[in-house]
Image 1 (cartoon, rainbow, N blue to C red):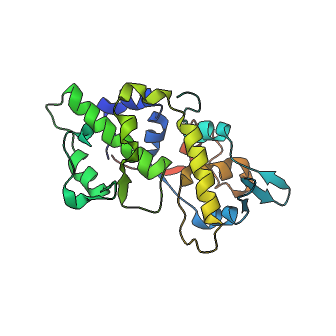
Image 2: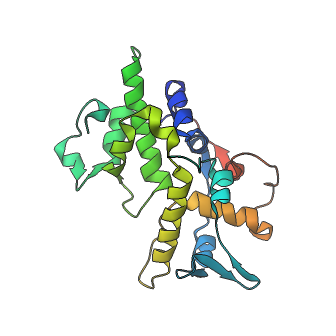
Length: 220
């Protein structure tokens, strides 16, 4: 979904603007590298067991890597999705793409708020709390979007870190075949904490840290 200037103030209020900026860059995910770290994850202690000892991702890492706040506390889209797009509290990505791809020229404040809700819901479902349901958006986040002015009081960083821990624990299961969760956070943390694994040419400091590893700038 395009990042319109109109909805940026709402993303800033929610503390999700830095995350939205990552969408303007292509973030290369190194699946073999992530798999190697998941194999060293211990579900009992929520740490990576390395030859030199144990280490893990902390709330400080979440704040620095993704720029998320770590302190604090269906009709919302103007219309209901088509019945064939809804399944067990999830909606197809295609409905969001078709419904919110283009912001109308005669935009009103209420229309901007609707588009901002849709964009934030996509961020939450596809980046922060991604699961193996790769082509659907979960509607569990709708109650949080009812009041956009209150979004900034939530500790998104704490929730993302807990979700990453849960996904890593699931990934240690011998029957797991796919990776899920906030993989941008995991890979950016690996590159930051293990410089020998970092691609060459990414030693310049930028905030959030994960924005340094966006290799190709894409048009919205």
